[in-house]
Image 1: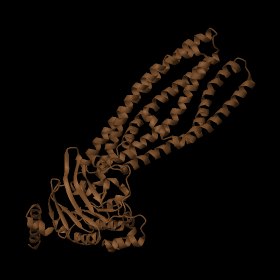
Image 2: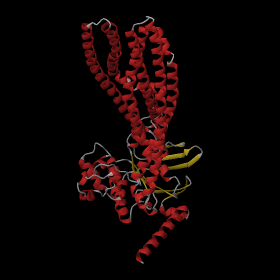
Image 3: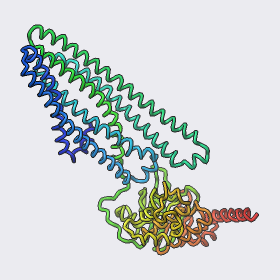
Image 4: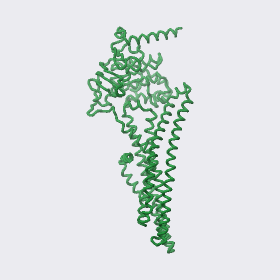
Length: 583
């Protein structure tokens, strides 16, 4: 009930349509309730009195009632469906907006398929609950209440005799409803797992085929598919048990009416027409109760999906604008890390006591073994994560006290894995600044050494890149990402191993574009190949989350420490590779 009340809050913006839907529902249901009363009049007034004129009047009234019922039924279904669909659309929008605001830690801990399931499968389950089931729930509830009122009016003693079965019906509905809801939660979880396996397999098709793991993926998907089957069959069993149990209790009630009501007619307490009408109303009660049991079961299943959606909506937004946050003005690019600690999990420090400063236009490089914390530092500057201790300032502003938008608008990132959208080349570059002109887009592409290869594509800037940019090479993807960053024109730039995945020729072209991009900006370079950072103004060497060395290339070689050791290893490897090529 708490969940459903929360769902109903989303209906308030559409209360006017909901009001008229309620009027239509009452009128359509009233037509159903009126029909047994007509049967009563036929038995008591027409058949006994042989009144043909009365029969004609009743026959015409039945036609009028069904015409009105059709009109009100249309209004009820249309208006209720409109409200339900709007609520579902609103909730899907809320879920997507929430996903945009959640911190990177959420995406680190959840599989892509599971996240997608919140907005697709779970919200779709809510659609069934709020549209189809709510229409039936309201209709059957009105018929049920009106029928009970009519039965009390006809013979309250007979009604009390009938009502003795109601507590048993409610008991069964409550008992099975809880089990069905638990089963529904399991179904939604399994569906999310199926979506996750599907997403992973499709997005990694090249890896799957290169390792000849098609059969393995088929078996993995088959297992999740069968888990979904078993979860659904458990839900089916519960529903299959609930319906005949309710029907049995209803049949006992109708039998009791026949026995007690028959005696009442024989003894002259009520008329035969009243008993027939009472029996019809009893059927009107048993049918809604039976249908309501199915509807409630479906709603319980949907509420499990609602719980998942609300669990998502209730997640804390740990990285957000603090109270009183101000817009960061255009910056010069002075960045300082002051005694910064960071941990993804409590008591597991990834970075410890990080201290450094950069001046405008400087290039600061981070090097060190894998897992040393280089990429983590780059993630802290745009506030993808918040520091555990210490502070980071840009031009003297604590980045936690400025708005996220104003901070991130002035930070450009070129990652190692270039993420392009399934759209045109033009749209992917334009993503850097949506109000840019065509000339500005082309200028950015030229600066990124991308214009020439773009013009060689079948449709130039309008060529479609495919999912994640699969239609072009890695070096071309990287140059489009650089063009996007150039178009954004940030004062602070982060290059996260932007050339490490490229071959020598592609690296040369991309590095040339990067050098052009870094001019006049404060740049932070995370490097795997130390040859790419030889000209950096400052090189910070990290190991196990701490800065253990700093200086320029020559100074660090002179120290003969970790940097010199790493450089010598890479230099020897390069010499060996060159000798192999010559040989």
